[in-house]
Length: 97
Image (cartoon, rainbow, N blue to C red; front, side):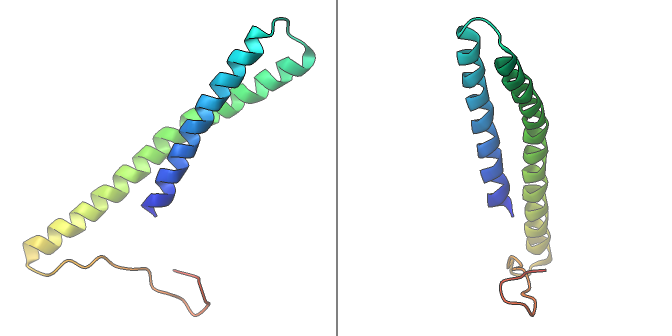
C-alpha cells in the first residue's frame, strides 16, 4: 500500500510544479482573455485540491510506517520471529481482501 501512496505523492508534487510553470507562462503573455481567466480559475481549484491532498498522503504514509514499526517492536519484545503479513487472496483470481 505504501508504494502507491508514495507514487501518488510524487505525482501530486509534480503536478503542483507544472501548474506553477503554466501560470507563470500565462501571466507573462500579458492581457487576460475570457479563456485565460477560465484556465486560471480551473488551475487554482486544482492547485487548492493538491495542496490539501499532499499533507493527507504524507500523513497516511506516516501512519502506515508507524503501524509497521509497532508490529515489528511487538514481535521483538515477545521473542517471536517477525514475518510481515501478506494479504490473503480471495477466491477470485487477483483480488485481495
